[in-house]
Image (spheres, helix red, strand yellow):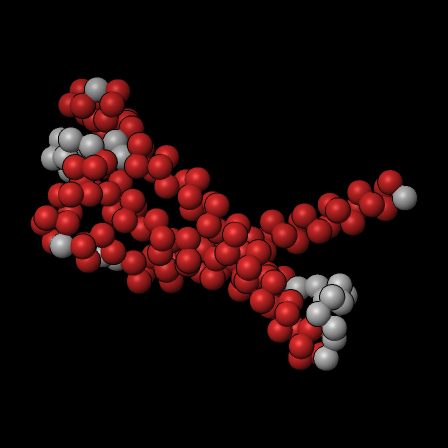
Amino acid sequence: GDKGLVSELTSLFQNEGIKGFFKGNGANCLKVAPTRGVQFFAFEKFKGMLVDYKRKSKGLAADDKSIVLNPIERLVAGGFAGMIASSMVYPIEVVKTMLTMYPGKYAGIGAAFRGVIAEVGPKGLYAGLGPTLIAMFPYVGVEFMIYETSKLAVEAFMSKKAG
């Protein structure tokens, strides 16, 4: 509608109370730790695969430590890590959306899971996954590229400072 931000927030508070501001937050909290855990695990695995590929393509020994990934390779590893993690926790994202969009329809997270399955079947838990995966690749890829590049720069700086 034509309401402004303040009037929308006021309306939300009047209709649903303070709980209205936290709709779907339980489901969101439930997905954060597994998402990040899977992202970091998958990122490290993809980095290892890229390093192994580069070693083999250069004919280097498996224990050669001279191979370093460039930022684009880190972006690719992070992008795929984000896609894997999103695929695994996507049903929780759907449930969070259902709880947020249809307040009061479901009694909680478990009821929302059962409701989606009852209403549209198990495939409903993955509705919209394709666009999400497309969005996750650059988003998480850039996140991990910056993280890893910054981490290496700080480590190099600190080792020079200590040495």
